[in-house]
Length: 335
Image 1: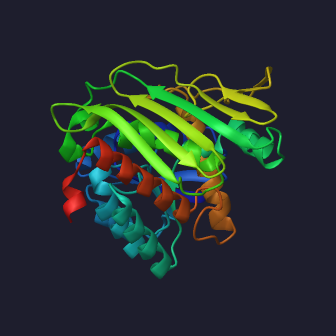
Image 2: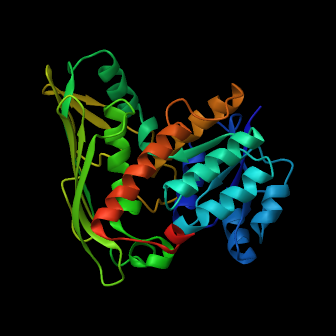
């Protein structure tokens, strides 16, 4: 039986998620409903993507008995209230990153999911690419010996996008793209919290961070060095150096399709893209997290074993400390 998806929001990332679903067998994945604050927008998406039902409110989607799981692609400050709505209605949720504006919001959503016995996962799509699966396997097998240094760079000139620079929309380099880097470092170093966090950066006139450098120091003299920016292109690469070698993700580390393992190239091409254009590079790869969610639901799991709620809380706590050091606060921090 197919997993029946409800889509919350008619934004760019939701469009790409819907296109990615079309690369999967219809016997396994179907988009059956979409909701947006603007009914006409939802109807436009429904027509474009062949979705049977369109709603002008999220509450209507939450009440739809034919929806098995909801993909939530709203702006960052809406993650908590919208997540509350669907979890409270008993709907499993795949919620875009960051799960909350701060660690307190992440904890609230996690506790709500657990109290209702409902599946919840933060949509770190990076973790589910075949290249990421291969990377995790290599690390688990000790192919690098002990990982000692992780270097990650993620930058793109996206400061013209309102949701990236406006504080009330949850803007800033860290919550938009830097969270991928912290997620990656946390995955490599075995889900432990850093012993120390050092952060420095520059703010936009709006009060959000535009360029950041972060050093995460872990026990055993292990370190992650991160740079992210919404002002300029960076190499957008990651490298893990261990006592027995090095693994590189040579481009677009947040959506990897290639690894270089001690100088040997391994490629993991995406399936052919569908005819509809995508808003973001390699968004066809959103299919992998959809597949993972389906498998979790079929097994009756309430959270992902790969991106657990504890993992999301750990990443959020690091992001909070980075923002504290750099001087970025949101209204949600005073709640």
